[in-house]
Image 1 (tube, rainbow, N blue to C red):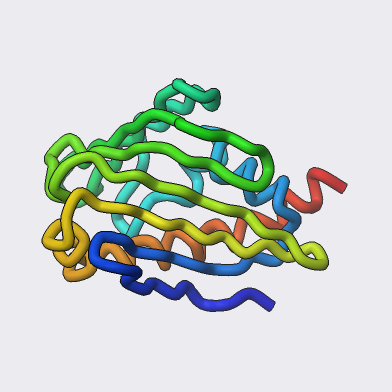
Image 2: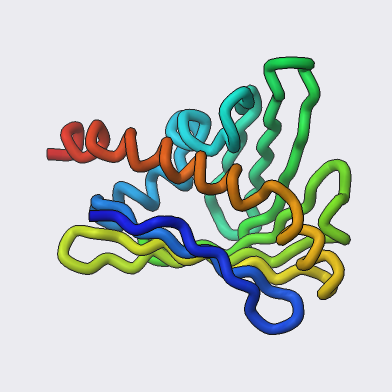
Length: 164
């Protein structure tokens, strides 16, 4: 059984998000790193789509995501550079939103820990300041991440079936 998303503040500038999924780490890692899969689940709350999802998965490679709100066509973009990739256990990258509402570039580390076929995903995001971190915590980020992770949970059985 999976667990609900938990989001906690860590220190003065960091947010840690954790959730478990009923799938091996390689499948969850793939879902985080293959554009055709990321576009299916990392859409935030209902009513948003991801028309742009570019991933150059290599150290020094870049990624770019653009989300679009269906009701009015508003876009929100973000990108970054991969700093460390240890498939299927860990990814470290930078991220910066086009409309820099998070106070500058953030450092993001995502780990994928598998136990008995279940994977716990832990993402630590280090912001440029405590004020930036606190602004993110006050935003609707938690509901958007939870909705995305719920979508991911729904596509994992299909990925498990394909991998079998």
